[in-house]
Image (cartoon, rainbow, N blue to C red; front, side):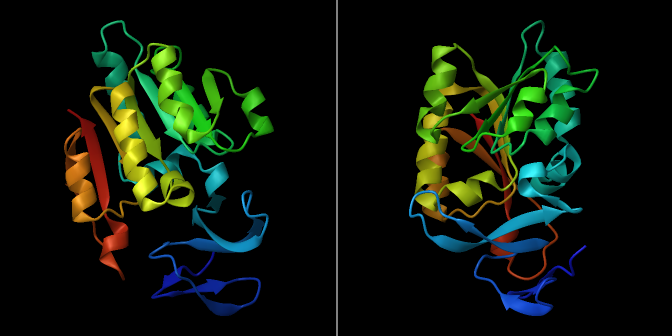
Length: 231
């Protein structure tokens, strides 16, 4: 396991050096290069890493830790309280589907909830997972997908997906668009919550916003977690 985050620098195991990073408070991080799909340029990317799992292979345990919320327990409660209706659960930025697969395979959830994984990359592992429907679309089309299928979402969780794929303003617009397909009382859980006061005000028109109390180190604003509950 890597040495972890040290106030603006990260110990990079390959180079054995402290590497400055410009993203805030990635607790355990891995620095790598990839080609940007849109610009076709190689760029440095930092992917969150918990317990040895990279983001696209995150286990349910690591996602639960990331969002600081008991996902399995809450999904079971949704099933029990739905009175015959199957609750809708969405893993936004699901990677290879490991976390949502582990959630839907729980004996108290399997076959009793509609589980979805959403990603902007297609993974061959999706073909091997039963009980989960994977959505490979542009994020702008995601609300329309659920409208067309007459589904209301009970729970959305994202393990760093929103922070990697959507800039701050796009995130707000996407949340507001998703509100039309959220069930009343439905929740959105994020690993990171970097929002300005004005952005939270805009979101408060559609969602009740609960800030989770966190024990933080380093830059506190990067560690904020919120629960967004549809009004």
